[in-house]
Length: 169
Image 1 (cartoon, rainbow, N blue to C red):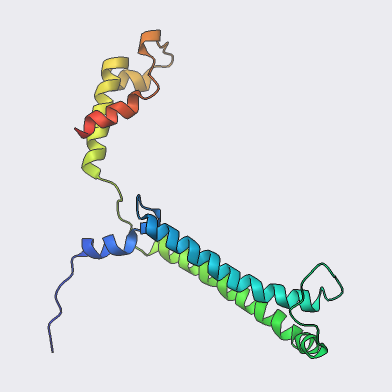
Image 2: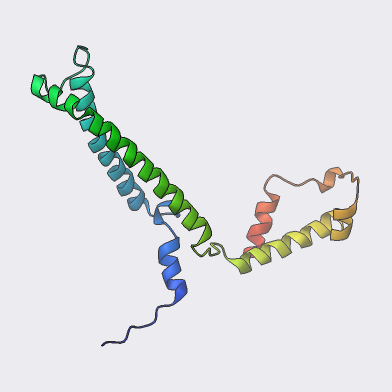
C-alpha cells in the first residue's frame, strides 16, 4: 500500500471555506456562474410554461400553446395527483435538507477567521492611541456620564479610514 501524504489543515480550509464568487476579483467566475444560473432557470421555466399554457390556460388566446391535442391534456390530468404529491414530497425533502445543512454548517463545521488578526490588532492599537490623544484615556472615556466634544475634536469624514491605512504601513 502507498502511504498517503499528510495535508495541512490550513490548505484544506482555504480551499473549502472561501468562495471565489464572493471574493474580490474573479470576474470570469462571477459571469460564468451567473450565466449558468440564468440558463438553468430557463430550462426549468420553459417546461412549466408549456404545461400550464397547454392545460390550464388552453382557452386563453394570449398564450402560445405547446400542444393542442387532447391526449396531452388527458395524460396531464390523469397524472395531476401524482404531480401534486411529488411536488409536496420534494418540497418537504428540500426544506428538511436545507434546515439540516444550515444546522450542520452553523454547529459542526469548523469556523475559521477570514481576516488578518495581526492587522486587526494593529488597527485597534492605532485607533486606541488616536482616541486617547483626542478624547482622553480609556477609563475616562468609558466612565464619564456626560462629555461635550469641542469643535476641533470632531472627526473628519474619512479620518478613521485614514488611520487604518496608516496602521497598515
